[in-house]
Image (cartoon, rainbow, N blue to C red):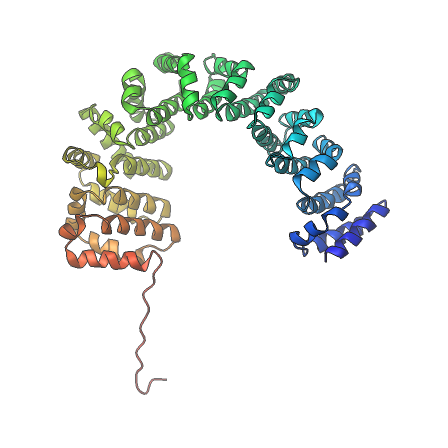
Length: 504
């Protein structure tokens, strides 16, 4: 089959309009294993196929892209970088986006190879074309270009090529295309900055990080909303958080939240700013962040009382993030009755809001109430028990009701709540004393889809692995849980058939 493909490839190179041969070659290549093509790699002459891309013929271009996609996979990245330089450069300036995407996918293979990437770094024109691909209208082309440049920047030589040459001017020139392209460049800069303190240093020296932060704290509310997402990404790294703190950016974001009450357009950027602090708290120390920036906690509580579902959703998500570890739970506990009222609102929304907001509330509740066995103390168990009773008059009935609804996302989210509390003795007692609950847990017929079966199995696992379950549920129920666990999530009980004498 490989020999037939080579023969067709030679035939294509002889003809001016080889559509029939291209179709035949495409068909044959689908049946040729990549290993066979690799064995014949030395005989692959791809120049004619690249030349055919330059003709303004849509079907011909489509066929050539499809064929090249397959054949290029057979070539080693170093071979491509050395022998197809000109073809790759032309591919990046081709008017057809599918050709650009094909070329960038091969550039992606080259930059992943430590030997081949050097060839790219020595090809200033190719790098320049990759930079200009960020400014194209096609998002897939831009993302592929960003990915390649980000990968190139993982090495010292790559950082120097991008930030200590004319490429930096090209990058700044591309940024001027429009707002969307400018944000794409910021996205690249944040990606590179997140790798290491040295990478961040190159990016800050370029002036582009400073420009991003200036836009973040500027007057344009829509720009703020976009920029905060990128700054939040930078804050995921320790060196990124250090830099933002040293530059006073975190204090500035806090001050903008303070002034949000008098800004009629704050709803555009406030959710992103609150998320920023939520992530900051969980990555550093919830107590330190909440003590240093009390406006953050204040704003989260305030947002849960909003009439705007977007604001409520962000507040609920943030509470879930904040309360996902013990230190965060203790910070929330210190707010006393105020947090109890907030829990009541979350319980109300879990029952009455839109499906999407219900699920977000249930996810936050799961995060708030989960306590690993090794962190369970009498005080913390009393706290979670007290919180649970604040959610509604009958929280068990609330979640049982949600778990019986026909939407599997809600069903799974409610099971997740039960799973979160399943290893806590007070919750086990509530479950055991809730009429029909133990039978509901053991009943496999309730769950119809795979996700629900998995969610039920996680609940059974959490119960069965608890040290207190046998005492609270009783040995017979404990053994039933162990049997369920050993049978797996998708077990179906065999239907026994009894032969009756004389039956047809």
